[in-house]
Amino acid sequence: MDIKESDWKIFRRLRELALERYCQRAIEDVRRVVGSQNRGYHERYLQLWELLKKHDETIEIAFDDPRRSQAVIQLANIDAEELLSQEELQQFSEELQGRLKGIRAIQDS
Image 1 (cartoon, rainbow, N blue to C red):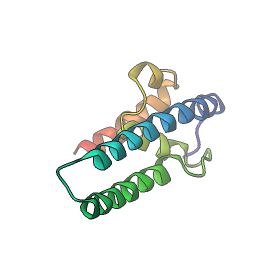
Image 2: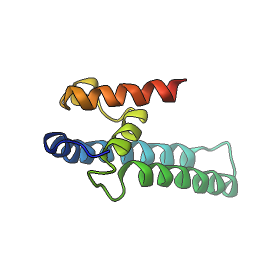
Image 3: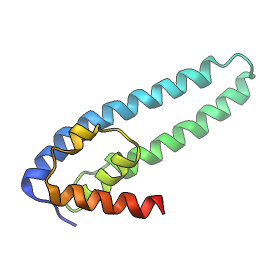
Image 4: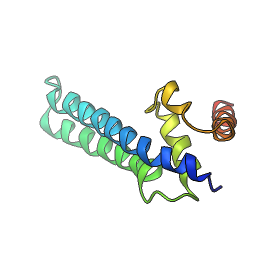
C-alpha cells in the first residue's frame, strides 16, 4: 500500500500536526479524570491507567514507526480520530483521498 512521493511528503508534515492534536486531546482527557472531585483517588488512578492505555494504543497504530508502506493505514487511523481538517486532507492526491473514502465507507458499515 505504498503512496506516491508527493503524498508521503504531505503525510510526514501533517502526521506531526495530527500527533500534536492527539496528544493535546489525551492531556485534556487526563486533566478531566484527575480533576474529577466526585471520585476517590484510587478510582481516578484506575480510570487514568485505562485512559492512558487506550491513548497509547491509538498512538501506536496511528503514529508509531511511519513508513511509506504503512502510511495509508496510519492516515486512515488519523482520519478516523478526526485529527485533520477537510482542507488538510484535500492536500493529498485525488487517488489517496479516494482510498481514504473507501476505508471510511468500510469502517462506517
